[in-house]
Length: 233
Image 1: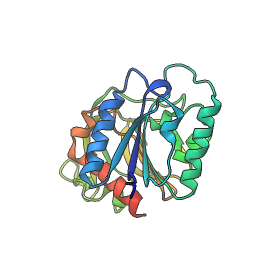
Image 2 (image 1 turned 30 degrees about the vertical axis):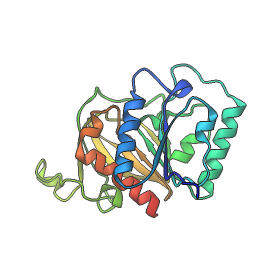
Image 3 (image 1 turned 90 degrees about the vertical axis):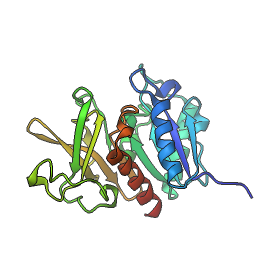
Image 4 (image 1 turned 180 degrees about the horizontal axis):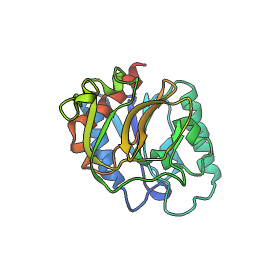
């Protein structure tokens, strides 16, 4: 009997890589988390459209970038995107991390599928120790289950799940009105959404700039929870 891989990780390479994100390192960290959950995992670099070929796999994790130059439309990649879209329509699950919000610039439907996007108005402060708290109304969502309580840091946040990690704080993302915020952070006077769900089969998690993000137990817990929730939902 042929073994079916549970999870495919699309790792930024070739046209969907950049010099600022160590995709091989972060994809390896993601693969370790997935394996520890007892799931089989296949890491595929996005060097050819065939990397996006999916059949009976249960979940795809998108850990890719947008490239460093304008990406020309390519019929082979267009067909690959159509195949991935069809796989999702048939019930596939998707977790996008960090630069997934800017990935696949040659796929116009991608921001709608993911539920949001990095745009020309998006930015982030310098990489630093960062805190993210459950969005209002999402405190009981399974993706933030088991996270530390923010109360010891701020009594006004008692009972609110907290992630502490070394990462970038994405800000000014263009988020679909139908997406449901999961994690937020404060930047100046603004509350910025860092993670969300799109429909019930897609999660976006803006953390994961480099390996330091994955040293945090609370950050890893978000990945564990997201994978488990997507596969159970």
